[in-house]
Image 1: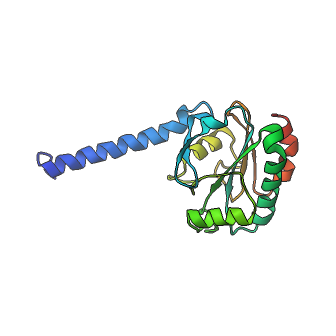
Image 2 (image 1 turned 30 degrees about the horizontal axis):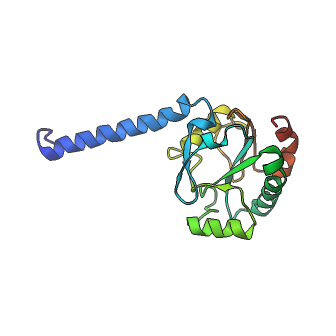
Image 3 (image 1 turned 60 degrees about the horizontal axis):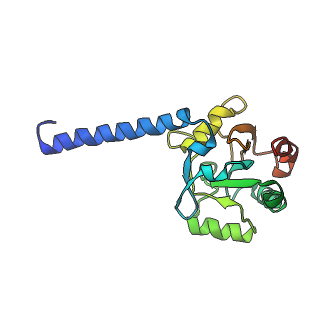
Length: 190
């Protein structure tokens, strides 16, 4: 490749730009001091700064509509949301993920339709990856602050992180912990 040519120079500049972008993304979760340092896309594709949740206890969870754990988790997340959204300021932030058994294959519209069927009014965000090189920086941060058993990777749908009012990940609960079992943990942070 001749770098003196316009095409060669443009290729080098493009590669440098990609490298800088990847470095910035890789560093973002390392530089974060709380979840408030992240911006995510909601289910409509709008950028949402998690700063908007300052002062609230959060449950951040990866969800899927076609998982064996879906029915119980959605039911109990809806119940927690309805009971504690206004009285305690609880906010549930759900992130669809298709990495586990391809159990969230639908479009944004499909996900919104499923939410309506489940009477879910908690916050739904754009579909993301939670593991691997394409994992969302927020989820890299969560895993770095609250590691898992044996490895830090998310092991399945419905892994739940509790975030305190200061934006700090304080607990991690695996897929087999139903949302209703989080109440005693949540009470420590209200």
